[in-house]
Amino acid sequence: MSRRPVAALALVLLSLAGAASARPVVILLSFDGVRHDYLDREPLPAFERIAREGARAEALVPIFPSTTFPNHVALATGAHADVHGIVGNKFLDAKLGEFDYSNDARFLDAEPLWAAAERQGVPAAVFFWVGSETDWRGVGARYRKAPFDGALGEREKVEQILAWQGLPEPERPGLIMAWWHGADRAGHAHGPDAEETREALRAQDRELGVLLAGLDALEAWDHTTLLIVSDHGMTAYTKTLDVEELLAEAGVGARVIHSMATAQIHLKQPDQALLAVEVLRGVPGLAAWRRDEIPAALRYRSPRVGDVLALADPPLALLPPNDPSAIFVGLARLFGRTLGGHGYDPARFPEMHGIFVALGRGVPKGARLPRVRTIDVAATVARLLGIEAPGSSEGAPLAVLTEGAALEALTPSMPPAPPPSSAR
Figure 1 (cartoon, rainbow, N blue to C red):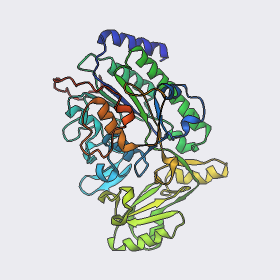
Figure 2: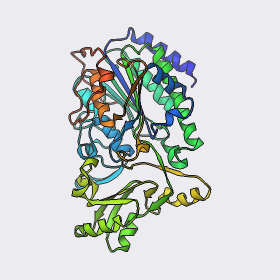
Figure 3: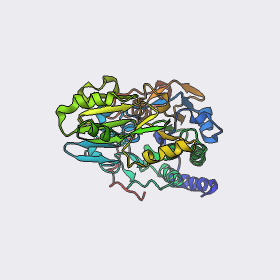
Figure 4: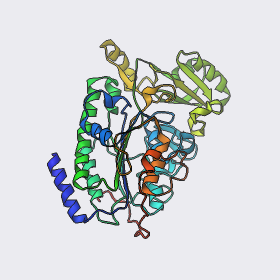
């Protein structure tokens, strides 16, 4: 669909909705795998408009590990992995079993934004976000898209966001959250500096421009704040290691969950933990600890991690031999190409840092922010909405975005939330 039909749709929705309410709206978009410096590499008109008319941070610093699922939950809860419980894209839980790129909210140990909003009378809408497909402790987003479909493009998300924005009061969601593809897939397959990665972001920028045009047509900016973040950055890696095989050669039996920069090691004989650590520390560029000795700064001492944690430095990646990336890394090097990875310690590797830009209500024009923490996003969204942050939030609202926003009183009586719907 071209921009013209989308803008026309927005105008129709505006006529149906009547005059815009002063009740605040926050739209939070996550662009997967967009590194903090990607926005400076070439013209990106939509992002440039946001930076010019709104605010841009130097970078968004993810929690450890700098991977997709832990950081999307950190964005939604304002908590580190040892609090919110999603310690990786894959992990084991003693009671719930295996988590494998799951959207089951039972694994979340901290309240997400959509549940906090609904609990406080603000309707929420989620178009793909980790943990949003099922209710969290009996509370879910009023509107949500499920199940996750990675093949779905951004245009449908843009149209749905504009449709939600055009709903009449009190049906219109005050909180809208959506995951976008960003440049993650291209960055993994071709490396962070490849033309394919650049083109992926250019395509995302074009869709973002359609969204901005739709919000313009709805005259939504007086009550709407748009926040765009990313879950992590990207760096190149050139060599891989199978941790399970390495330990087996040393006589240490284990189930290992590899995750590029980290490996969670569940030992068959827990008394071999010291031996496992010793073996792993013998590899250049690889650190290892027993779970209770993981550095406190990583905020990662969770029983879901396993008995031992291994942590690599780039350009080393921890991958099992059957992983496609492990298979193709040699070929990529042979042809002068690189592959991209993440998950590394964001305190030591700025390549893991993402983006943070904002436009609309409460955002000073042309503001430049220092580095922002991922755990501060949820508290900032809540303050913009005039509600309390999620229950386990450890972050703080960004004063530059929230002090200037007139936080209107919420509508005192909201109708009971209808069942979550993928059709509205």
